[in-house]
Amino acid sequence: MRTAFEYLVERIVSRRCVPLIGAGISMGARRRGAPWDGHHVKVMIDKVLAPTLMARITRTLGAPPDVRSARICVSCQAAFAEYHLALAATCNGTCMTCDLREARLSRALTKICEAFLWEHGGPNQESTYRKLVQTLEIEEFVELEPTPAHYYLAFLVREGLLSEVVTTNYDCNLERAYDARDCLPPASKMRSPGGLMSLFRYRRVKIIGASSAAPALIFTSRRQGCGNR
View 1: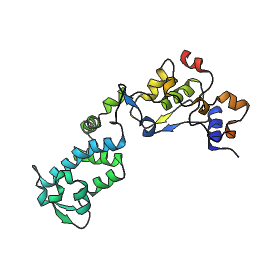
View 2: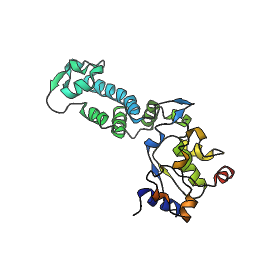
View 3: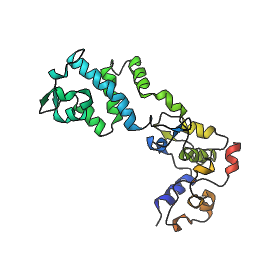
View 4: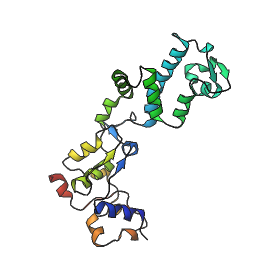
């Protein structure tokens, strides 16, 4: 019986694999050699939530807003205590900030961003999108450094085993890893050699399934070819 890892390797070897990667692959990425969390979903939500909430409160209550004239549910009063919503009158049903509270709880960045666009001119305005990009500090993402996973994917691409990679990420880590002269990560960032298998060896003798601890990352044995292509 094949393991999930064997199935994945067979697909890669037969060039029938298109990786779809999301934010998780870049969670450990560093910026200018130092840890940075500006690209983490929770941090991005907080960046967008603050101006969205203030814009909605101001639009609803006027400027400067008097929160005492608002009716806010108990859950939102507690969730947004830093905005002094506890001073508002309590309502029993859905209030004007429930969607933002629920989006933060479910880590729904897209919903927070959509609310931001509506509160700052509408989603059809190019200037509104620019403001959202600035709020999220997307321009900083270009300085993120590839993780070992990016290097291994780039290596498989250079070896001709992957023809395309689909990603939803804003960073340029895949491109930077692919453009590196040696697209394998430094030795200090590599996992234990026992966890790395040669695809060509696997193609000849299927031994990966014999290991109880299947490796999480793979690369071929033609390392030199990676840097020369």
